[in-house]
Image 1 (cartoon, rainbow, N blue to C red):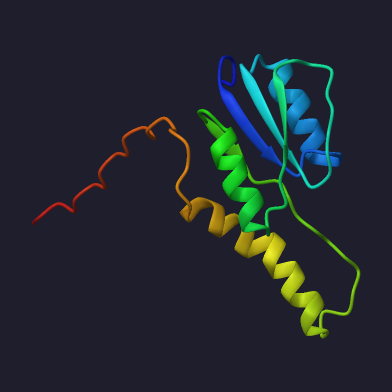
Image 2: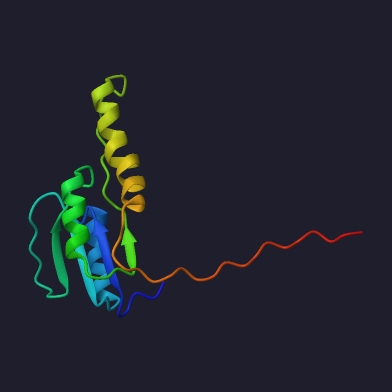
Length: 129
């Protein structure tokens, strides 16, 4: 994927895979990288714009949408993996809120201007005999 001169938003960007995704986007020449984290973040590269973003918090999502001027690539990396008893409904609801509902909700919210996806090829029609 070509990332040079693109604007990228990475959720869960404070550590691990998310942090590596931010660094890789910068290495590949991204024009701007929005780094979504639950806690404030600082970065030495001026192309990185930190966003305080808890993907389960509707107010955080709305503020992020207002701050992101344009977006080419969204990487929904935020997630949790707790070694808890999933028979506990509260724990199960927390896992679902972060790992499932947050990513589906962010796709349904109004988003900043994005490039249109490439046209899809129409499926082949079966031959008539």
